[in-house]
Image (cartoon, rainbow, N blue to C red; front, top):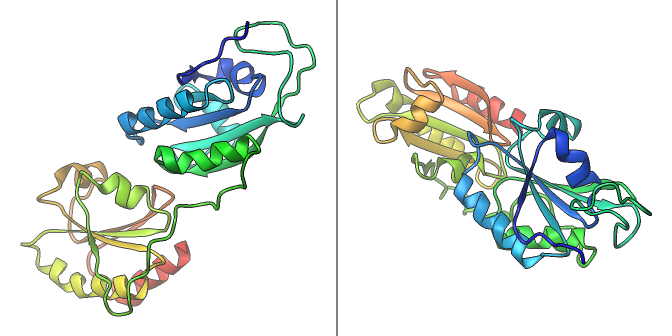
Length: 259
């Protein structure tokens, strides 16, 4: 009698072939890192998904420190990242299960059919799993777009240590973050430029401000030693930074280059 996993299982480079490419059923392979991924949130999503689809889908976790070859092989450039595998033979993979070594029978190796980036909720992940099982259409890439504010009404988003991961690194658009403090004179010169950029890029980019005195963890994480420092992010990673006061056209050009 076949054994079905109703919890996520861990894999590495040594077990990737067996657990992912040779699995009997479709696989959701999740590349993650303890340094860049909120572990509790990710585990909750994966555990619920594994329970909901037990017997239909195998949920596999790959810490990139243990799976650098698989990460490079599939060009996993941001974390967390979800890769969806199923065999070329429509519907099912026959004759092999991770628990039954050596029994390959009519085995068809799994192929990558889709990928999704970022930290989803269980509800956001479900349409991808349904697509993997050929029970629904392929979801649109990226997160649902927020309603765009009316012209002239947009303002920079105030972010904190608590929500930086979600609001900036998890955004589906490039982000510019102004690291500032209330006592900083040059920061007051940059502030109106950041306000203007928030209006110009409303709906296209995240324009945010982070008070370094109130949120020292994020400032230290990115090595902000003088302010104002403006850091641009794309796909959850720093793309460029500007230290000090710069003309608005310089900041505008740098943002446009990330779109």
